[in-house]
Image 1: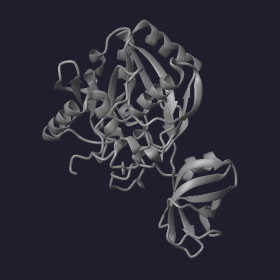
Image 2 (image 1 turned 135 degrees about the vertical axis):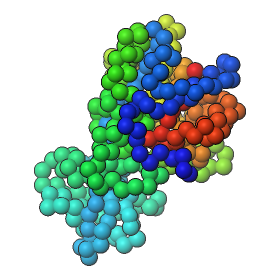
Image 3 (image 1 turned 90 degrees about the vertical axis):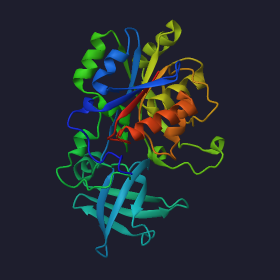
Image 4 (image 1 turned 60 degrees about the horizontal axis):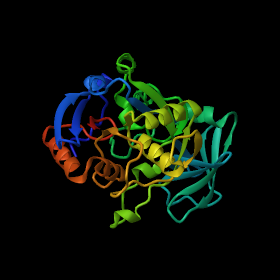
Length: 332
């Protein structure tokens, strides 16, 4: 547990990088600052440009009790699927005050312990949430995010543009403007797609049989420009390098559906488990994940179970930092 990174490093690119070579079954230690040297001219690097919004809202019930609401997904305008803590006392009809500009009403308690809440905002809901909300750090980061909320800046990639994620695509957190510049100078092409990371990404795998595990679908968008770059790389046999499991899922979902890359948006509904044949992604940059997570299963499917387990053992014994603010692994 002590290898879970609780704080980001001062410099994004100062993270360590474990380079894993599937062809030789070997791995070597490096630093992320060296990442551009591991790519070659003609590679297509694919980034997820989703932007995290501050999805945690602190409010009070009419009794004065504190309630924390976590926004999961907008079902229809001003009506959201949420998690609530403590949820025990929340009954239909209960009101929650967040500020003089925002209040909510409990509409429905779902079977899975989630709540449907209707919001009333004096002004633009998104703007008010940006102001009041707190950064939704993953559950394993055990510290408060009250302070100056430095996480607002740090728990966001430098290329984040399209608001809608409740978690950052963490492999992207290592990039600085300078690293991106060096990649471009090397002749690496860059495409941006969008996958709005949802709560499903954190849900533990409960199915004993992996083929029965499902990651909840997440909203994605591949625009014309990205589709063109991806399709050209696919046709010309250039290596597609995915930054993160979210990017990987989106690309693999899209190509499995269409047989080629095209501009589209919708819900990426693909759970990558052993047996999945990767048709898009040729190399993967990813952080170190929780043992019971769908993300680790995806990475082990890509890299080969045995090799990835060995690499993880090496990372643990070498003191690599795990999870969102931790180090990364580049699998080629």
